[in-house]
Length: 319
Ligand code: XMP
Image 1: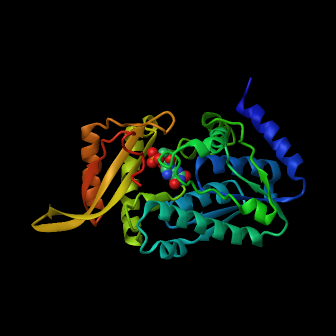
Image 2: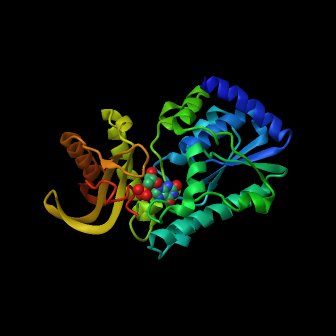
Image 3: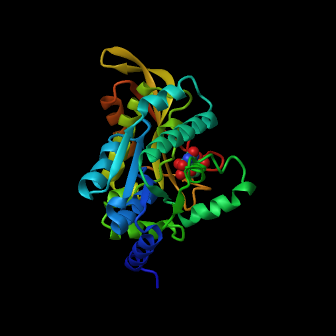
């Protein structure tokens, strides 16, 4: 019988045996999988683990601070935070094609991660949050079409070049098992139950060219949306929810005057496998409340829409 406690004992022992006295590096994203690996490896080898957290400027509101708080402050994990917003935004300037944006974000991440990894003397291992469905997906990737496999950024190429060996303690686990392990390791429930967040982050939720102004507006709108989903109890019933920034302006009324501001779309879907999904029947009163909060509180947004497209024919993300 599989239990999270039993798995942890086994994984801790096997990590210790594998790495010995070597040092291990890990790209921490704040997502469930890399977070659970960080907590697990920290339990096994403590300070031999160094995590690198790259803030690409495309994260949700306060995400970087939360990651630092959970891991560095509360758990005593060694985490290097790299503030790389300017590099990412300058490389993305003028680029509006979704796949090009993905490639730029992925490559820039690897460059930065690689530079940090080289600074860590004696690093022999790269820990990754690969889980069982990832193993299956990459095995079948050649037969899938470009529409259902988007170029997820992983650090492929890095281990060979740096002579790093891979440490993938979650390789045999399904997502719900990873979550149980995370809870058992004492990670916050909110972190463990989070919806998936794509590697390119807000980079693919700002349609077309990415600008800091857009990212800042989107972060505020998205945060209000998620806060209301948590407060109303809908968050856990939804598989993935987020706001999308539309770089078009529409006219509105504001007091005695006229506004001419940007639009956000709210997305929420239910799905088992993310290959197909249905739009979530959000209560009207809740939509009304979220919409008026966003428009009142986010200066620069004057219109909110709700996406009623399922997958297929839509995709979950807008890019
Ligand atoms: P789509 O939009 O293809 O999304 O219906 C399906 C799931 O994949 C996530 N997604 C990504 N994840 N890098 C990622 O790490 C990406 O480039 C990417 N594109 C989509 C999406 O958030 C959803 O969970």
